[in-house]
Each structure stands twice: as C-alpha cells, then as structure tokens.
Image (cartoon, rainbow, N blue to C red):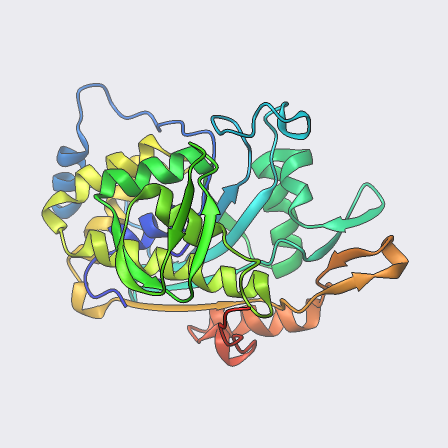
Length: 328
C-alpha cells in the first residue's frame, strides 16, 4: 500500500497503506466522528492516552479499484455501469508493539473460483464489492483482515495532490494517458517530484516493462506507499491534515479515532519504525484449460510460507524473490 524507509511516523503506515497502494480506490466515504471533534483534537487525545490502543498485530487490505467513474472512459460501454475490479490489492500487517509494517501484494491475476468458475481474484471485487475481495484474500492467505482501505483513480489523484505531490524514483521511461482528464503524460527515468496524475501513471504502468510486468508494477505501487509514508513522516505537525486527506478520498471501515491512535503511537516511536515489502506468487501464463485466460496459478503452499514469515515479523521477499525491473 504501500503502506513502504520510513523513519518517522506511521500516520503513514496506516495511511500509506491506504494511500498508495496507490492504489486506488473508490467510494470515498468519510468515517463519522463526534460532532464538533476535529482530527487535531483526536490526535491530542490519542497522544494523551485517551484513544483506544491496539496491541496485537492486525491486517489491513488496501485496494485500488479500476472503476471508471469520474474518468474519461466512463462513457465506454464496458465501463458505463461504474463497476470495477481490484486493480491493486495489498495486505498491510501493522504491529503496534514492534512498530513494523509489512506490505504483501496480492497479484490481481491470481487464480480463484467464483460460483464454480475459475477466474482471476480481482473479479471478486466486481461481483461482491470490497466484501467479496476480502473473502477471497482471506481464503488465499489464511489471515483475518480487520480493516480495508478502498480507493479509485480520481480519489488517488486527489489524495496525492492534497499531500503536495510525492518525490519518488521512476525506474524506466514511460508514457500513458491520464485516465482521469485525458492528456498523455510522459515520465523520464529518475528520481523526481510527481503530482497526482503523474503518480497514477507510475502506479498503473505495466506494458513498458521487459518481463513480469504485473510484478514490476506491484513494486512501483509499494514504492509509492513507502514514499507516501516518508512524506507524512517528514511533517508530523500536519498529521491531522494528512488523515483528513486520506479519509476524504477513501472508503474504509477503520474508525477514525482508532486510526488516529495508531498514528499517534507510531509518531511517538519514530525511531523504531520498520517497513518490509514483498509479494505472493506472481508468475503467470495463458491457461488453455481455462479458455486461454492469463492466470497466476493458485499456490496455497507458497502463500502459506509467505504468511508464516510475515506473521513471524520476517521479510516476505525471502520466500518469493522480486523480479528485476527493466524496460522492454
């Protein structure tokens, strides 16, 4: 998500998780708070120990959906109903005691079965919404998901812009039309400042990589989350505003008072924060037995190993090595 190099706060951790994962997400419904109580006051109460603290590690599912609502493609017949799939999915394990955040990408092409038919795991979101996606990810990974963060293309661009942009590395030259407003955007390889539309291009680009294109895109998505965390960490005084920006642009079941408590706790232990990042099995192929569909075979044994390492506080990349990122 993303949620990943932090040195200071997890406002980001949680936030980042969401954010970037870039993900992307749709729905943006703000969680209700007590009337007249600001996020700034919630931050103060959390730092004073008045918030509800969580001690055991928990999982957050970060989803970037590809609904075309609000984009230039909503008029196309295949997108007109506004439904979408989970274009990006990322599990974020947050450990409030060790102040560690571990991000694990769930490849969207992972094989699953819905209503007796083999399909991709991202189809679960289209058919069952965020609840359908959560159910399938829990079945695949064997972990219980406590919270979710769900964002769409428009909300992603808005969120990055409200952060003031991000500074990150673009691994290769790339170009892609901004799906929200239409113009073609070109990015040159190298570290640079990106606004919302440019960040979305980085998050969505796949086809200009030489190989393992989806896995390479997932690396960029997690990097965006890391950078977002760094961005928030560099401005602890603005944590409340960053939470506002997140909540305004994401659909979530995470109560804002609990989110604020987590942020405050991580902020107070900035020197202890650690972020790890990896993925589940990602190598796919065209499956003749499934009408030539491109699928990542469902490898529950490897997923079990990945999540055992993650639950033990380890690095998921020690189980599933990451691909080398190269231009096509």
